[in-house]
Image 1 (cartoon, rainbow, N blue to C red):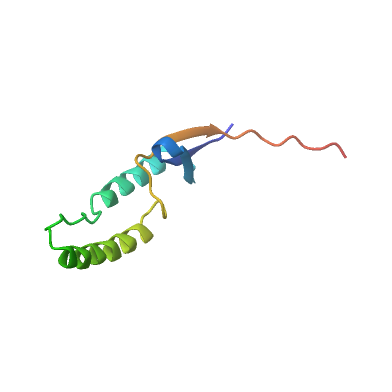
Image 2 (image 1 turned 120 degrees about the horizontal axis):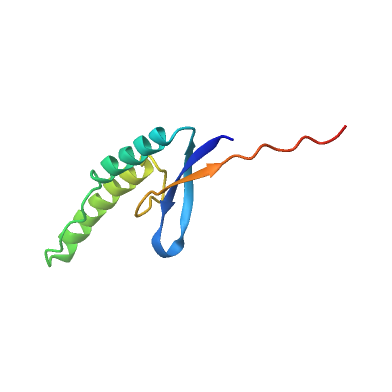
Length: 98
């Protein structure tokens, strides 16, 4: 029987969502490594300075960067906290009698 390796996006209290399936565990692990590397590039939210007008402009710039970053995320929009790999055994579909 064949096995596929499903990469999940773990959203903590919201549960997991499937992201991609791979034929090999090595490919699934490489994809998770790509996600981890991408997550390191996440824009950092600016600190408050106490100047509301200045802080709002800085946050607006940050938010636009974050939205572009999120849209380009390898796991798609709504990335998770971690990305477990779940091996799933494929079971052949029984042939119907003619």
